[in-house]
Image 1 (cartoon, rainbow, N blue to C red):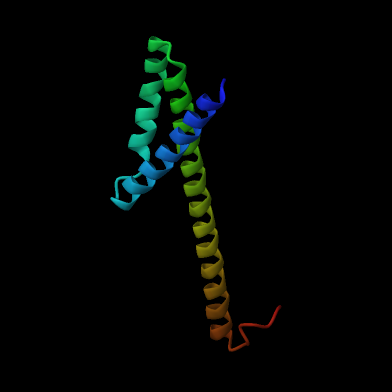
Image 2 (image 1 turned 120 degrees about the vertical axis):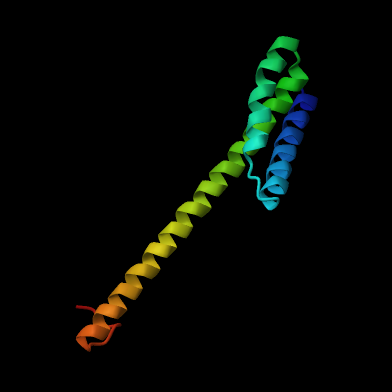
Length: 105
């Protein structure tokens, strides 16, 4: 793989990230970018195009970065929600018992 192929790979990753971000802001989600990437894989093999394959691999890398970031944000949001619910439950229990909500049992 030449330097130009690596450059096309990087461009593919950037295009996928930007396209997924634009689609996410339009409330569509990044899934169309993934579908196009999956469709480009057999096309690159059928055409025997190293350039198209480099772009497709870059796009796959870019969409995987977007999806892993989205999963990470979802995980952290759910974790924060659980912590807040536990804190509220503890404060409500302490209020019912008439104790200090910040005191450790």
